[in-house]
Image (cartoon, rainbow, N blue to C red; front, side, top):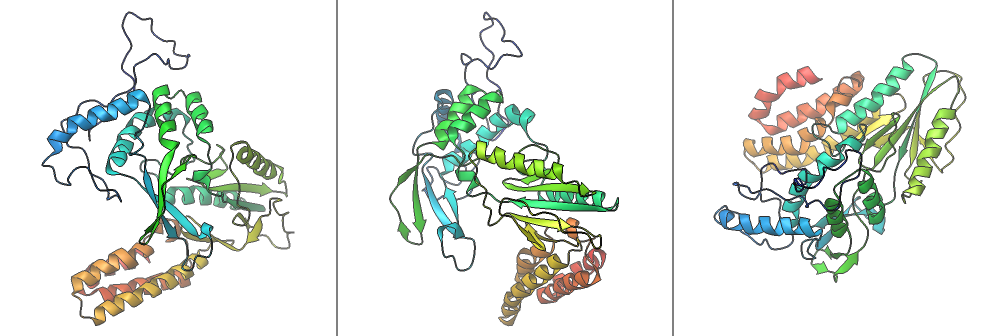
Length: 415
């Protein structure tokens, strides 16, 4: 089950005429199935439900064939067993002191079997939707990540400003529960328009509807209820001036000679697209960053959707400012690393071995310093580089001899 799986339906009966290349897939074709495999079923991350098989490989040979038959039967019928899609929702706070429901991020935990089938199902679905993927959607793609999204957006801004006498306006849009408000019927119609196999579409619809869910906080678990809305989706209109990472969308307006009509048309089209697809913009979190290095130039008109113009904005984990010098990002980075250095010093005061101190530094401190460093490492000013270097040096000293021997050359090179 771990190997490659087929992305197409088995060929129809040779006696029947071949389908036209322009006609939609026929519903009479056999449904896609997972081929036999000689490898063990992959065991994924822990789940709130007790696993139905042990974590070792002693019974992999016995479970491989029965689970394969059950999986293929689920694909053939286009139905997902209720027990498989039953999930337990854990509310994770977004801030230190949450005051309302929107301050929590719901994380749904499902069973081992469902996680296994999701990965296998993805291998069937992905080849059928590649032709409709947006090239500027930087999430859910192999070898593409946050750095690519930020570098692409900043490249467009810098290329425009380098020509002189120009203004760049970046509108950062935020959706209200984007992944929970897409209607399954709308998604079903779109998948059929993409010429996705109907049996796969039926399986997705079954998976996203009538999902029993319970909520657990600490030791208290609610009664099981039904969820009728889906949790999926690429929430952005395809356009070369849109930069997207999952539902985090930014519209970049490159304005010259105060001609803002194209930018306003982009915003209006995006708002209309959201309305037609059942997505609601969270105007309180939708911000605009205006970058203009000219002098005595009037401020541009604000966007008429309740948007606030800001001097700094946190986008995909990095702080952007209207001077593009990364001062705000290095300042926030310095504060965050200093707060975590406290725990490293406390561990050192307990005479923890240097190997564990080095592991703690690498996982808790160095991970912050190296996050998206290719985006900001070469663009920050001297004071920002010194702050980042001081934070890194303090962590290296707190980590022990391993840090001193392996971190000096890297620190001098990066900063």
